Length: 454
Length: 69
Image 1: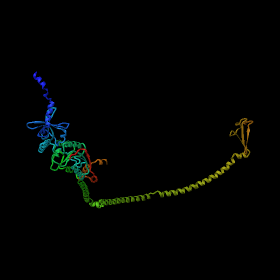
Image 2: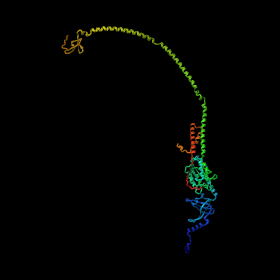
Image 3: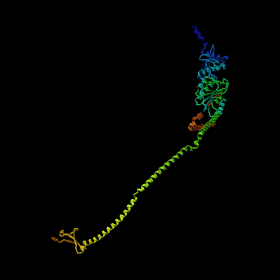
Image 4: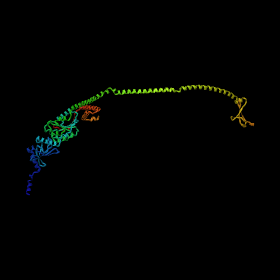
């Protein structure tokens, strides 16, 4: 009870955690030694937070101190802090009030010596080589005559100007797309990666990743594993030209072609237009010569053929036949003539035989006889005619004397009934009409009475 | 004609190479070889003209990016 009361009474002497922490933080912050410390150690538990801050622990064999590097400082880093790296850190020691932890607030982190950098590089190189990333089988073939080239480099740098001049001079056919890129400094790593990705989407034939000469630290971006992996993963062929001839960076190992300098990269990527023009001329000459030779050899082959004596004197080809033809023709006409003569001969013989057998003389003789006989006949007929005419005349006289008209002259008449001469009174009935003809005229009478004299 | 327009310089050069190779064979018939020869000469003239008339085209992306070099 006593003790509790005492506690109550002495309440004033107890500090809140917050107050104590604040006091401790004040002590740290105003200590000149802790305000600016340089400490060396090995990084562990390195976490790159999305907000840009880097959290880590720094340790050596005996002790550990937690640390943080805020984005404002982390952005200025020239390399990428990683697990296990030996580093030199410059910063201040303070307390993070939320958890009372003292820690180092790093303002700069450097690899512990350039040797460390190379050590890291060697490790990365070994790792990538171990995965076969440097193998020639991964090297993509470069097009012989690229049409479109992307340059990932600092657009304003002398290196790019040199490259453009080189393209202008060697192969102005090409289309260049410059992707302005940070090639050194803390942000260059991400920018190079970003621009490589962008270039890979442009559909270009080749990507040139280039940077002019500089200190090894300046070129370090191109030794970064992440950058090398990006170069390796690019679908478009990548040609690297980083630094001077003597500098070989990690990207050079994974790229499809390593050029010693940016200018060399440009030179290796495109052919020299004069070489092409030269080649075109040679090609033209070559095929022309080739054609001429072909024609010449054709002529040569033709020569002995065209010199063949039968081609030169084509009559030789048909002389034999012509001669044969003449002989045959002669034979034919001879044989024809002979046959003709034979036939003509026998014909004339037949003709003369026929002549001998002709009936013409007989015909002539008979015809004469006929004529004589005709004359005799005519005379005879004449005589008969004359005789008959005489007889006829005497008959006519006789007839004349017997004619009815001569009877009528003497006063006789004849009666007709119905066209018939009435020879008997019985042929007529009373009251019938009869006609009586006289030498001159006639009388028509009606019968008054018929006296039938028996 | 349309085909010629889209044909790249590389394709033209490759075609020229093929023609030269074809011409170097002995068994090309004369008519065919004359046709190839004509094509070859035309192609090589065309390529020469392209080379002669070429003008470098440069385009810069991301000009606004800071540069420390």
